[in-house]
Image 1 (cartoon, rainbow, N blue to C red):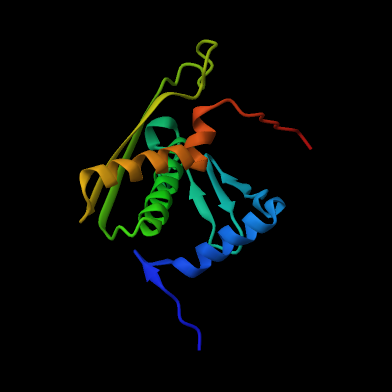
Image 2: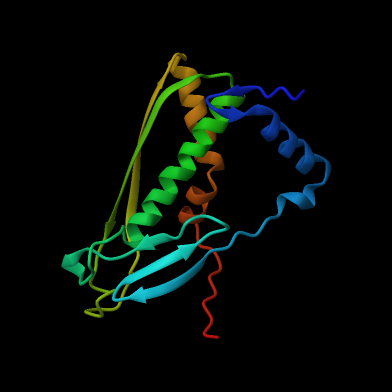
Length: 171
């Protein structure tokens, strides 16, 4: 009979097993992730990730789209928020903190001039801000330590915060 211990709906045994496997064989920590995107007409596209249902993307009507799905820059904000949520759940669980609720509001400032070809410059976000609300029975000091650990270990946060090599090839 298998007994699984959970806290915050996180499978502690699975996380511990992964951590130990990577500790024993560090090369297992180097992973590659993939998404395949297909254009669906207009500004609509779909991302296929593993065996999940396609993730749609579109632009708001004001940007020429049909407003049928979040746009890519909104999905980027959501990716950061979702990554932070995983970090809070994982690290709270490891620290024995029971979460009753977690909300992460993410927003970013983006100037459309470069994207629209109106002037050269930076087409991406100029700034991104996240506001985190944690509902838990834990001292403020523990929640601050949790927050610092999550910010220090967020893969999406780290990706956005530094320059990384980006290669986009035409096949």
